[in-house]
Image (cartoon, rainbow, N blue to C red; front, side):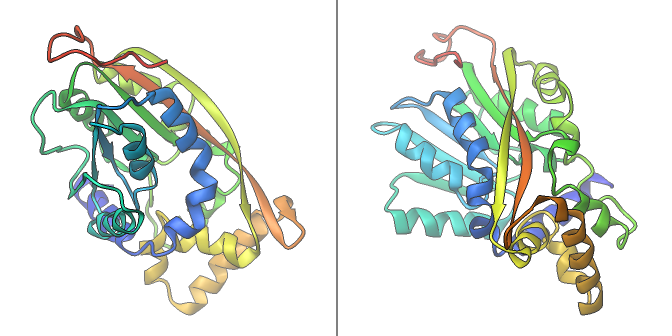
Length: 285
């Protein structure tokens, strides 16, 4: 898919993902937990959360860098940024800067941040290498990036939903979705972008859904496929749901589903002395 079109699909699609937080918060928590553990945020640090979604990671990061720290959160989707702003206001989180922005074109000066986070957003970038080069640029020397993506396709039991939808669109909806989680791809991407001390790991998880309706809604309306779903007529929607429910039938548990999943998490450091731009940045654990 041509990069400009892919960006439009992602922007408009995530604007329509109305149930994202409700459907996916618990499912992606293991990835966020491990990403934050590897990032080792400390009070006083300046953090950039790229592809912030509804702020699930941003708000947690804001608590970890107090006192004296700050979090800037950006997302391609205006609606996601708006939701993060609403959640931050409701939770009384001060000092959270929010902006609509493309991960491949960050509108920040060089060496602006101590840490860059990207929790399950990099696989949506048309050019993930460019997105990581931008992350490296806005980090000060010695700063670190912590990235999480979905893991191997075969380890994520909900993966059939993509082929089910794509057969009705005659195009790849998310061409990079599992590619970065394959083998050493994420770590290699960080190294190509100029990061050093790169380390990666796999994080197994189980995603629980209370019913087939909940499982189908999460896969089709609450995430990357929301734009495609919005364009299907009622007959097509019924067909897609039936096929998806049949595909995940082996993982039924009572009235609900327990779907195996996997994440890949990697960290890397921008080379250079921690004293080059003020010091104080620690290497990832």
